[in-house]
Amino acid sequence: MSGPPVAGLLEGRLAVVTGGGGGIGRGVVRRLAAAGAELVVNDVDGDRLADAVAEVEAAGGRALGVAGDICAAETVERLAEAALGAREGRVDVLVNNVGDFRPNGMFLKSGPEAWEHLFAVNLGHVLAVTRALAPAMTAAGSGSIINVSTVEAFRGIPANAVYSAANAGINGLTRSLAVELGPKGVRVNAIAPDLADTLQTPAELMLAGRDPAMVRHWVPLGRFGQPDDYGDVVLFFASDLSRFVTGTVLAVDGGTLAAGGWYTKASGRGWTNMPDSP
Image 1: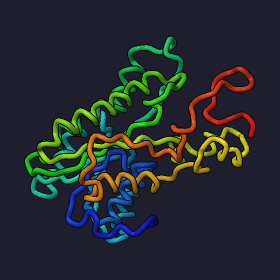
Image 2: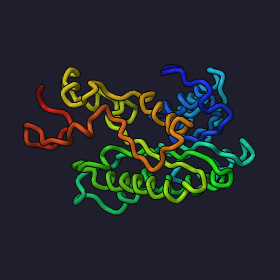
Image 3: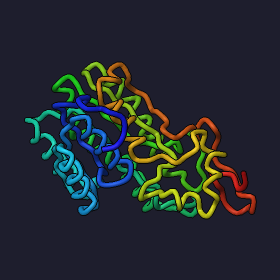
Image 4: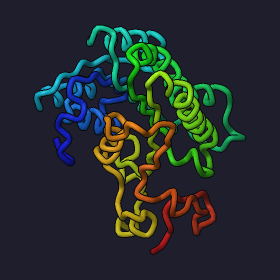
């Protein structure tokens, strides 16, 4: 498993990760397992989930997969049963990772069906899974919940207004729950990614034919993010390294939020978050 040495940071703890079969979630699973956590992992894709579990076990870790759409109440119930049954009702870490910007499009051309889907896949399941597992944390007097938001909840993003609104809800939930659950020993934080080179947003698709050398003109750190980049920040929030940190939404974006936002294309048709020329 790649990345900085983290062995022992989560030794003896149980971590639950949604959407852990690929992308950012896979990086989170990889890094939490390397730190010694036992994993309960959910993903809608059974094959990717099995591959993630096999990777953890091949490295000497322990992981249990729960396949299914986390937006479905039945999946949330099975995930909670698996997690609460693994360590006699104790859950130490919860990572609400699932999210999707699709379907997207201009708000005035959208409708309730698309809105409901976007809220369910980005915010609704966070409420449901947290409600199912947080009581075990408050009962134990400790725990860490990490949500995955997006930098697009902090800046205007064209043709993705509902997606942005749902993720702004994640940020508000993170801060408010941190205040509510803090006295019970539970910390709540979030990461806000951008430009993650994953199955959902591959670098090739984001570049859209542009010269890869142009990335340095928009991303201060000069590259796209890889799953382990996000996994290591989640590990920080999950571990005692962040024991006095709660209610924080941390941009994990190579500096893009600080650098700027979206621009109209030189052609006048649509927008880009990367310049059309160096």
